[in-house]
Length: 202
Image 1 (cartoon, rainbow, N blue to C red):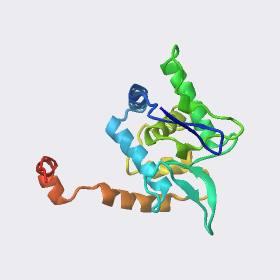
Image 2 (image 1 turned 45 degrees about the vertical axis):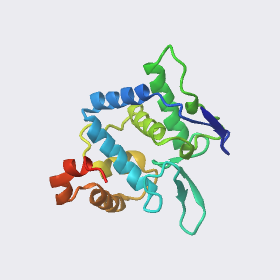
Image 3 (image 1 turned 120 degrees about the vertical axis):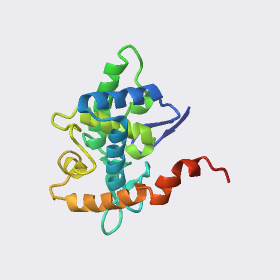
């Protein structure tokens, strides 16, 4: 297990994931919100795709870039804000609560520990760890729900429950989704010959 310290006095652990925890959390999402694992993963990917922006697409280490230069407080795939009592800290607290219910007799993963004075820098965590934060943040949210969320209306969910600003940014989200769909929709050739191409060795 590799350990490091970032500038928020937060332990950073690599290779410390328990796949069972992730799979169990995904199962909870599927049951509570009546979503398949594939749809849930697609929703998570879509939000991460938009949040990281075109310059840092799907980079778990993404750092918010503010207009005019400099860095903002958003970090990671979902741009959880750093700082005391900010989005990153809230999401991690909720994840730790979910994990306590999942493994009541076990020790919580070391990577979930953080200093409340500094909050959480999600960019120091792995992609799966950040996805767990994101899912648990919704599970413990007083109002948010993924029930009925689809690729067509995920922008409404993002605007209401994830975006932290007062402006209506759904048009920008829709632009990101057009790029996401273009990137992730297989071509006619891939649809027709996908299985053959996947099995072909060069």
